[in-house]
Image (tube, rainbow, N blue to C red; front, side):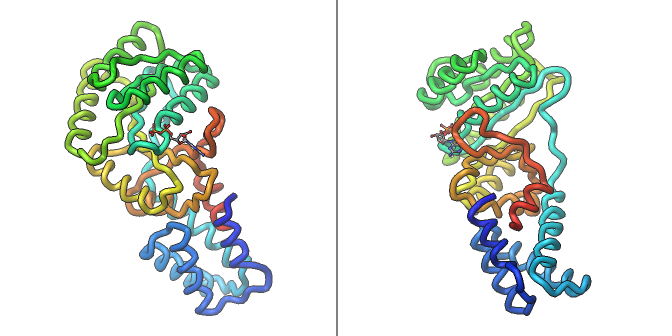
Length: 289
Ligand code: GDP
């Protein structure tokens, strides 16, 4: 899957016998893979115990147990609210600038249109004129309606208009971009509370989902962002972008274990089709080589 999973595969390579040192080296490798020190120690210990219990003494056997332990970690995340289903869905994409929110909004719109839905893109990042323009370009390319206001406008008003457009028959899923101003947390929270109120008053029965977009190449920094956003506005799930490049991916396990946050989609490139649903079993198996 990645350069990093190849490292794990090589680590457990043919003929490896399991000594105490192996588990120490594995801890270092997991830390290198963005696992976090505490999680890496715990997992290496669990693996050591499991190998002992199951009388596994070879690398390949240990690697298989590791995949199972990793999958169990991912299952600690809460159940994701599916964007699919009847009625109106409102998907809010949150995250700091540059993580790929606007691109992901377009990818989701394309994906959902392909599934027979009628998406509306809402240009809720009114803070940056370029983000509004970018979303409009995507909308034109994809043939998807974009609801946008002026640069500097009220994001909640944009969502309000998008809900009106949907209710007038214009769509069944709203994908809203938002501003990524992490340095003013209280402003972000206020903005989102306002959007919450709009959704509550105008579309109470809608499936309202908040996805945090995180850049996989930022490693442990992504976890720090998730902690801040989750505490501020309670996130439903994560979309991990830029998984195509040098991303190692260990942070996904910390998201599940530390914050109970599920990853919903993995993005692996800049093209519209470069998005796929996240599957715990597949991810755990691929991560472990
Ligand atoms: P935003 O500021 O969060 O809205 O981020 P953008 O959507 O503008 O994306 C920032 C940059 O990341 C752009 O150059 C995108 O093309 C790029 N990008 C977004 N998603 C991916 C991805 O999954 N893989 C790669 N390689 N690049 C991505």
